[in-house]
Image (cartoon, rainbow, N blue to C red; front, side, top):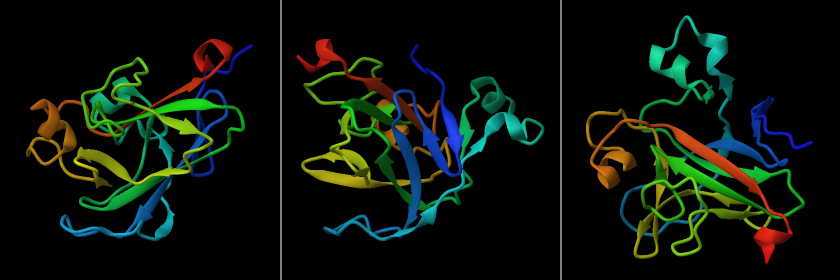
Length: 174
């Protein structure tokens, strides 16, 4: 039997197949220049949308999932753990693939690669913005054109972070 549920374990999100994701608060870096990975400043709390149904917008209740209390323009990076067997993890922001910087696809792709390989990849610190650069995960309001989604797709509909895990069996590993 395969576990297809997503669970919250403290401030960790446990995905099907055993991968866990932590959302790490960090310093906001300047947009220009090259910078080392900024320090982790603790984990963002992860909460079920359903537990706050009376206080969240209807659109959130309809989608379900989890939420993080993040201030506008606050930055984060994602920390991965929990899997010993190979797995592929897609990370999206507003339905834009953080790995490729292109619109989201529910299917794995090698060219361009739209997933990270676990357990080899311990973290993801931002969104591929092309030419070998990465932009931080930063909370911005929807509707102003400042989101990655708005810049890549021209629309701001989804927002948030999307995660999709694939356990790899012998067929996928071939």
